[in-house]
Length: 124
Image 1 (cartoon, rainbow, N blue to C red):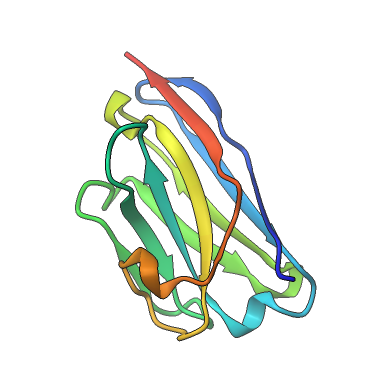
Image 2 (cartoon, one colour; image 1 turned 120 degrees about the vertical axis):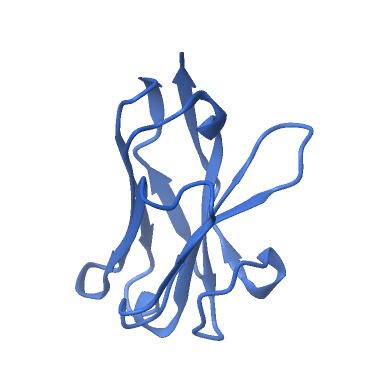
């Protein structure tokens, strides 16, 4: 059973930064591409960013381009989402997910494994 555990969420003022981490089972992370999604209660989940297995290819939602950076450390089985210049509209529960296809997909159904989520709240 592959488990993903997100951390690093919290409360921050607009313009601030947070770094989310996604820790996974040893020996599995380097076989999957990784994505970050977010969801606000009552709304559809939203793609945020994705990164290929090697880390050389990334994909971002337009709403976060230039502010968020996705990265990964395969040796440590951990992925990251650096979030800068945060806005109140970035408030959501953030989930990391793994895609066995190895691509930087922006569709949630492409991802087989999901974490439990971490809350990010940005105040104005």
